[in-house]
Length: 385
Image (cartoon, rainbow, N blue to C red):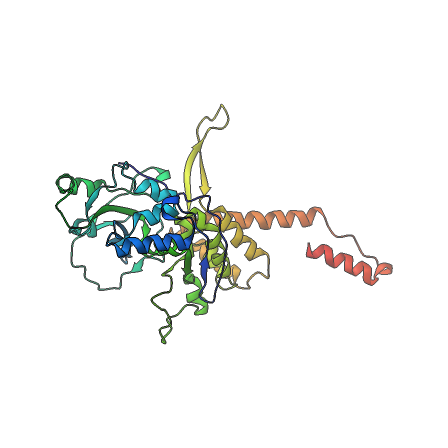
């Protein structure tokens, strides 16, 4: 089974943030499809006018059960040339030489794909997955699909099951007599449907729209549904900035800006110790000769953790931090929040270092005869440090 890692690099970005938190960036495109965003859109329009626009179908999971099972893959219908002109990842993924991206009839019955599910979806708190309500009845059985074991395949594409099911039909596709639409069918099993849809929109327009973090909705009521129905058909589809941060390396700076904007004294503890910030992986490194193989835990998104720690310690620490830390430690001890250990250790480490720095460099003593305003100012400035 072939797997790929999504790494989208070397894209020059110019940021424009509107009232809708829409981020506009420039795009690189191949010469065949144009070199600017407008040329890509015009090329896509020419294809659409000729009836040849949709030639790719990409599936991604869209829902999550109350027990954490991820299911209900939904397809994005798009144009491969547009995606390939925007991203080198899709250039390789959708190329004719990629054996597991097979040409099929796009209107084929994909019921076997729609039944797929997994309880090993890596980002278990992905807010771009729709949560199933209690009592929901599913109309079809679900086939459990496990992701590959390789660490590098966190975001991967595999159509091995698709290929096995369709190999006979693929070979039988008539090349000159069929009028049915043909194209490539791909299944991205570690990306949410909403995230993929937002990225596909970005590939065409260079624009993103981020939804507020769940912690802000919970604590501040930000992002609650607008009864006036202000969302228009031409608006970019919303996605979580944390989910987009996972998906596209070239958009991480933009997503991190949005994550930081959502930090408040009420949400910082939720975000710092969330399963997203605390994601880690275990790997081996060769160290001393006496210990040739030692395992190490490495945080997956160190910049996010650092940003949130800087926010927490860079302003007035919330008065309820001790209560929240006590609750966190209880959750860690009973196994309901084991992932928070790295962020907690990092926080304690910073506090210890700050304490030791102050102890080893006490402020100069101020005598009764030296109570001038200048002396008081010097002492005050030292304490601020």
